[in-house]
Structures are given as structure tokens and as C-alpha cells.
Image (tube, rainbow, N blue to C red; front, side):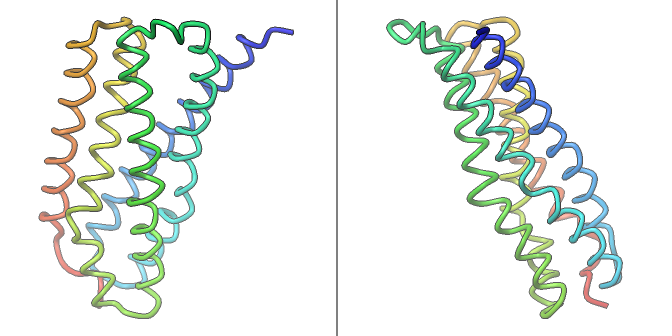
Length: 181
């Protein structure tokens, strides 16, 4: 059986799931942050909540299948593999343990506590973590494509993650008005 080919297919499916989640959540987050009314905010928060499994499940698929594909190199892992493992682990943990619970909290709060929902929507840490994970994902695609050395791999992942974090924090500060009306 073509186990490596199957692992590569699963790896690519994980990549698609992860970036489809990032793309949808970027757009839905922008719509949510731009809302003025509670009903409109509920709509966007519901859609954002529905996309929560995409990014962390994609990261898990990439992590497991990538681990299988790298197993043969385990004695001397190339730098791009080591940094890629760290990056995908960061993406999975950040989205699964920090971002997704906050997206769910926004969704729940809109039904019961509009003031808490507005504060959660404006929370810079949520959007900073989300955008940092997105930036790390972009850097990981680079290092996997060019099979970069250690310094290039670190810069290619850490720089867009840092820029993403700053941009995400700034996005939260530019929220037009609380979605509590």
C-alpha cells in the first residue's frame, strides 16, 4: 500500500482545512467586529462558532501525517521539519485552547450578556492569537516549500506570527461600536 502517499494526501487535506478555517474566520471576524446591532452580531458569531473545528483539526491532521512522513528522517531531522512541527503544534494549541473557546464565549454571551459579548469582541488577545497562528501557518508553507535552513525557517515562521499578533491586536482596537444594541 502507498502509505506515504496516503499520509501526504491527509497532510494536504489538513492544510486545506486549516487555511479554509483561517480564511472564513478572518472574514467572519471582520463582519462581527463591524456590527452595531445584537441580532447582526449573533448571526456572524454563530457562523464564526460553526467554523471552530476547522483550524485545529487541520493542524492535527498535518501534525500526525507530517510525523509519519518525517519518521524516516528522525535521526537527523532537517531544520524545516523541526520548525514546522513546532509551528503546527503552536497553531493547533493556540486555536484549540485559546481562540476557539473565546469564539464560543462570544457566541454564548450574545444570547445572555451583551456587555460581556461586546467586551469579548473587542478583546485584543483573541484576535492577536488568531492572527499570530495564521501568520505562523503562512511561514510554515514557505519553509515546507523551499526546505529552508534553521535561521530562514525561524524567521519565516516567527516574523509573520509576530506581525499577525500585532495586526490582530490592532483589529480589535478598531471595533466601531459594541454589538449590544
